[in-house]
Figure 1 (cartoon, rainbow, N blue to C red):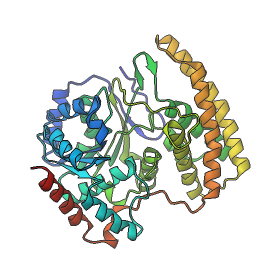
Figure 2: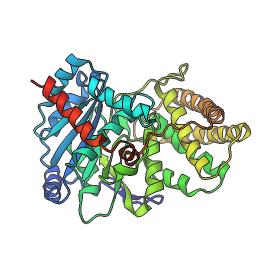
Figure 3: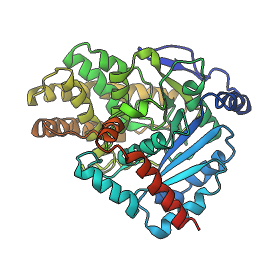
Figure 4: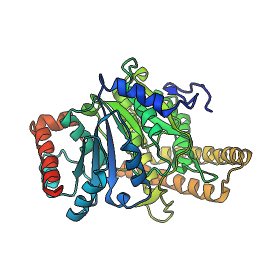
Length: 407
């Protein structure tokens, strides 16, 4: 059972009573009359053949309060798109699949590229951005949740707790970040959050001085969780990164656009496990190595917008401060694991910290070498201003794909 402690400057909604799912869904069904609800699922085609997504779809088919499910499908050819339509037909709710590799959506993407408004790289950020655009275009949901498609421990309770804070008409939250304990199969997981993000935020507070943004970020118990929910109006103004900095970028946008009392985090799962990324010690272009560089650059860019100046010497100080803090955290996590009868490999933990420390310098150098880099995808407000018919065209492309390949 969780405690009720409120840490930092963001409201935490705990799991204090293991409330039955039937009671939660009964309330959500009542809320849906006033605030229709939707779900965004960014997916790779390969996840349809995995262990997690078939189970997720089986659980979602039983959810009574969703008005719409928007699925973003990446890396699929025509035959695979047809198979995806059959796969998701198990859902009783109104649902649509964005075939991101199909000719219609690619043509629209090319027009946006010509205007300088399309995502610059493939990946989850691009997928999520187009799904957000479709949700705005369809206008079927007022409260919208988003979660990954590789959750091995999924059940309906996760979605219910994730969307509840932005669905309850008596609450004033615009955004909710999910969190959970990353413990599974007798191990403590979540290395990037534990060993990079938290110690780096603490190191930045020491080197840059007290900063309200850093305090805000450090208030989130699991800042890299891929699960969050929001009110529909959030989608108009948000600018998200297209790289691995997506989760950090979303939180940064919430900090920029909303007061703290409109944001919260919620305990959404007792256990959580998903597909694990390789550490990629010798490959900066993949796995946790690339993820750590992208995340670190996202933090540096945000601080730069607040007037902080960076130099090679400053990055060396940040790296050294981070390294000491992270090593101390390893001892803390080890002791926590031992007391709970869990496993934690100190050697592998230290290897990860050493790689993250090196990547802080790489991220810093990349930041200095590319001062004009703009990894954020434009907001949908800007896109709609430049291409006023973008929403009906997006709807039409998705409907035509469904009609042509769904027979």
